Image (cartoon, one colour):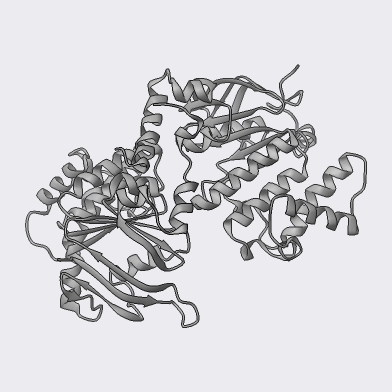
Length: 269
Length: 253
């Protein structure tokens, strides 16, 4: 069985500075992998490299194979065929991911219609409107007809992130990449969104690449992790192994920091 | 004995929408208090009132027994010397064109504090753990955590009695966050600290007392240990239950 996403010795640099250094990992269908690290560790860059979204001017070497297609240095045409079919991304800040001038129902309708076209069926008119409402209720938004007519600024941060997730789901991707999807949200909203992502990934048997600096969030969301520091994977393995028995000093320092707040909450400093 | 006393305070930016309702809060000298609330709860607005940047619509705020009167210039000059703030984002709260010396000495200049400013800045830098050669450098030469140390040095250089911190560690990486929390804990031995945050884990690590704010109302307040062990209000319970823990997956330390 071939993996859904395979990075092999992937490096990204700006000419003088190496941002990602020889990164390799594979993600199977239905698997959940966490990429953890602090700012500047190259987590988001890895996701962009894997989907061919790197900004111009960065040079890449090595390989990233997504759904059987080599992404690195592939032409845009080829990449567009995989984006929104094999993979969809949910970003950190839903407000910048949504068009402020378009009703959210229409924004969700776009990827739905495109996916239908790609599957060789047509989806428009009343059937498309119905599919939008069904998707909005799938991401547990209240009163879908009202939400569909709303503009992004009329929704709360959590509701906007649900819309962004609905747009990703509309693509029916095999792989969902979530880049710090709850970092901009309140803690109670974060809990709801994490539960939603967990349910959807299981129900649809999607693979999940979950990017976060927040170790407790990662521990509760994925089964395997890669720890990144300054573009290099310092440690990889199951959540139980890496968090329970860390081998690298950097992983230990991250865990110690996370535990100190955990313990404070337990009242045992 | 209280340093800050908030009594029956109501506030709204417009008459139709009340932001804070019936706020009662006492902060004892030397205490470390965490104000916890989610976005829109009114925590930053309450901070603005405590700094004298806005006036309550109803109720009173006193500092050291005297009413916080934004119109009383003599009182406000003295108050500004005694109450200082650290903001969330060290990238936007430091002037990129000024040297670190000039940034940290700013309160000394604007508050017209006499004395050897070089010595005072050097002491503040030492207190926050920055190098002695920092004063001649510029903000862009420092990392996020170091910048937050610079912001803290600026806040403590005039030796205030009351330090306010508005989400002061929220923009920082996890390991940096623990170091800044340690620094604030150390500084709190010498001053009264009000730490405002949405992150109850950080507050639990730093503060002796917790005040929980929901939709402009204080729903629960008391000793941190008691509230964590036995939260009374449903909102506090939901807040605590929502915090993800490393231990959930039965990973022992």
